[in-house]
Length: 213
Image (cartoon, rainbow, N blue to C red; front, side, top):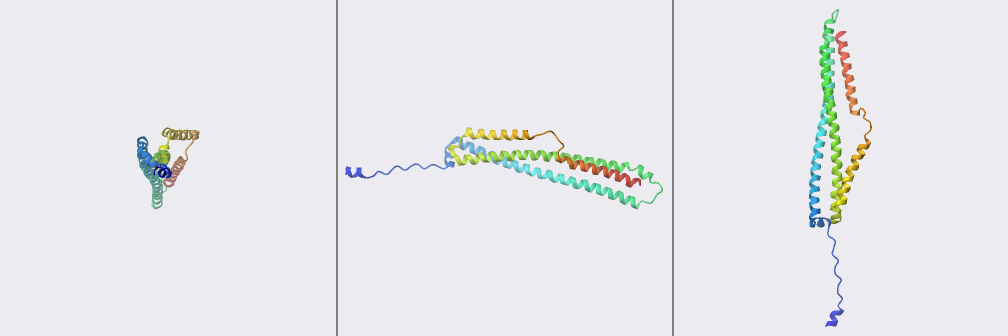
């Protein structure tokens, strides 16, 4: 019996199967805590990005409204002046109306300056929101890649190496943006403001012409 038992082939021990990376993370307190923290930060960044996008859309709508208000105000004022000049009785000397022309000119100038200041302020707000939104989107993308790597590698995820790589990526991004900053120039968003200021000056000249001729 002993010889027969010795002749029986002993089956090789089954090799232990490698656990899933998520199971490895669940068994490791450090990796599990890091994953929870990164998931919370990822959710927070997603909410902040959505909030920034909503504020940016609101700022752009306000800018569009100010443009429409500017053109509507000057179109209405010029139309009223033209109608009043056309239906007014003909007088040999329009000096009285010409002397009072400073009143509509002053009103038009103050209204134009107020709307141009509001446009410039909203344009600056839009630029700041765009920069903040771009930075937070890049942070969310970097954090998402780290979370994906942690879920894929499990315990093979080197905490010190990967976190240091994340910090280096952020530092390189800041250096790249600083390197692209050239000499200060007039931003392109100021060109519409200058164009509207020229249009406002043209309206002043037209107002003076309608009232004095």
